[in-house]
Structures are given as C-alpha cells and as structure tokens.
Image (cartoon, helix red, strand yellow):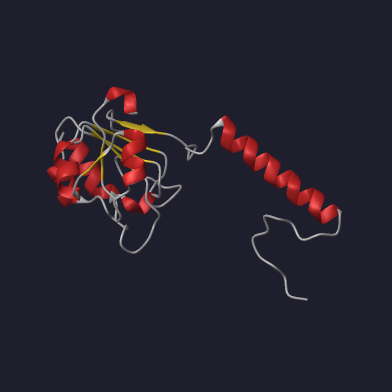
Length: 157
C-alpha cells in the first residue's frame, strides 16, 4: 500500500481491481505528473511509450519529484532528463535501465541527484529462484527428449 502514501496511477486502461487492492487513485497523465512526489515507470517499450517522459513532461513535475525508471531505457529522453536534473527542475532520478544501454547520456553519471544501478530490478530472491527453476525444467525436458516448456523458438525439422 505504498508506505501509507497517497498512490496515484495512470494507465491506458483503468483497473478497478488494482485500485481496490492498493487504494490507488486513477488520474490523467498530466495530473499524475503535476502532483506525484515519486513517479515510477512500468511500461513496455512501444512506439507510443518511446520518450514517454521528455522535456515537456519533466517541466510539469514538481521540483521535489523523483523519477524512477525500471521499465525500458528509451521510455525516458535521457538528454532532456540531464537538462532537467542540472536545472533542478526535478529533485532526482533512479535508473535501472538506460536509453542506449550500456551507454549513458553525457553528464548523467556526474550528477549527484542520480542513482544508477546495473539493470537489476528483477533481482529479487523470488524472481531469481523462479528463473533457476525454469532453467532446470528446460534442462530436464531436453534430457528426457521432450520439448522444453519455456523454449524461446522452435527449430524447424
């Protein structure tokens, strides 16, 4: 429940079950950007989400706001982000992904209001355990002459 914070969210589809489970309040994107203290991005990289956060969106955010991106790098225009951070337009950012991995936008790493981690958002014990179990299931299936349950592609015979 967000550490007893008021939770605002925006999505292409409103989710009543999510709202009920978390107490989150659905708002339009502009309201979210203007009112949120922390903005955490959780979107796939699609043509519609590339640079979802750019200069215009950053200009709407509070000077005390923190932007967190653990989804995909190109969702945030890093050049615009560097400018906003240097100008103290927003307070800070936390990045697990980068627009042009592994490169960072020039100046990003030198800023003291940036936290950069090496793409480890999925590194929870639960996720890594499930990844290991899936790999073991695939190995056992192949050794048994079966199609792996989690194959990525199938070779044609």
